[in-house]
Length: 404
Image (cartoon, rainbow, N blue to C red):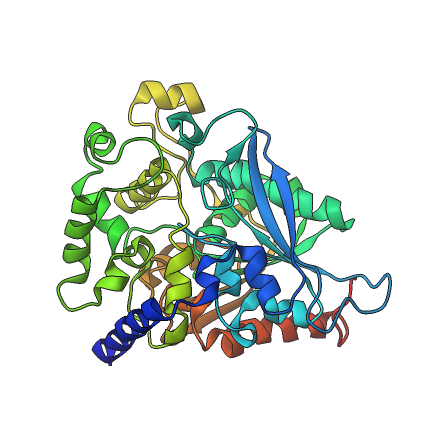
């Protein structure tokens, strides 16, 4: 079955190469408007100067509704090496952002520093290595509050619903654990392929942690300290090591699939070109290194600068401090699977489910047959995840989507 699916994916990619889907060349707002939805671009500025562009779908294809009608916000945050197009890459009936917009929500799509829509700064040129001195630490501590606060200020709301995928869950868990004031702005947290520890993962990050991480200087010699752009020889070696000889080259040439895993029986194969045209969307070498550190250490800690002296300078202690997820008091809804390379079930069961307060873990959904990318691109996600969340929120709003 796996080989059959991968052959279909490769065949679809080759066909699409001859008949390019127009969405492969579009920006996120262009993709949104292509399907008949309104699109807005809203910029957020972090307190350290990064300018992040969010994408907003204020209402669905049926129109804005009654004048002055208040629409609750659903904020969607992408994962590692991804961007806001994750939520709009399928057809409208299968894409989370379009489904929620049509259901009556004000949809906001976040972008973190370093991706396609997060490569601007008030003073630092992204061509300079200094621009890339960040990991998911900064995304949690600086990007998330800038994005969320801008969405709330723009709309006049005091709180919102949050849906995160992969790294978008790790950053939210981390921020909620350390900032009670910020936590009051998150009404409910839906965590798709939730990330805490990643000691048991498979794929690229596991290989990098094993091969390169033990020598801090070697890591910098091989990958540099700017944007994570490994050269073709290294990518070919990693692809062969991770994928072997039996998987379509079009997928194993894609960095995201090396991280998250290429096997899926849920992809709409006619959309494969759209997926890989927009991802990977970019991040820093330091962020990838931080992920590799998590694999090696089996902890959820801040970035390790490689020496006691450097850690002392940044944290006031010789080792990076850890995040404490037991302190989170927001309502949380988890969706995870045994078939996920990155949100590995051993890490979910061994860390997240034992760390999160059971009084605030409102739903723990074990999904059958979901790989890491099926939560955003899988054909079953609309019926298994998105619509049930819409129905849950509608029920809690008294049978209709409205501000409460």
